[in-house]
Length: 104
Image (cartoon, rainbow, N blue to C red; front, side, top):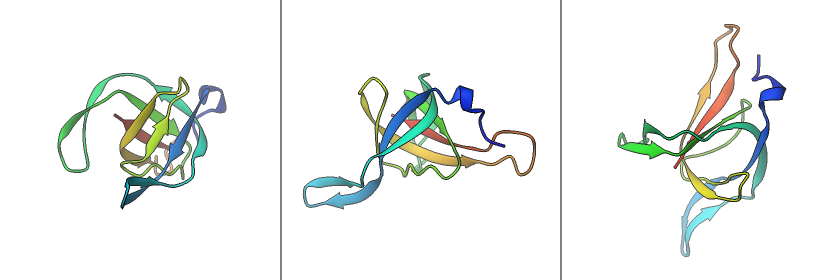
């Protein structure tokens, strides 16, 4: 089961983080992602275990790639960065499987 299509009202652009190059961070080609964007500020833990502030969360279909450090363009044109990306799988329960991406 997926998140119902009528809730997926937003589109963001995700440029996957590839690592640091000689000129700074390197990103892959942008992918346009249909999603639900929740612009709510909340505290989350970074992969390093630090408590950081997330300005918004993207809920997208399973398989959506958003590695930590990826660059995301929101619908209003604002640029932000992925704090973490987690698969949310209901394990066969009648809950929507999705990817949750916390943004700076």
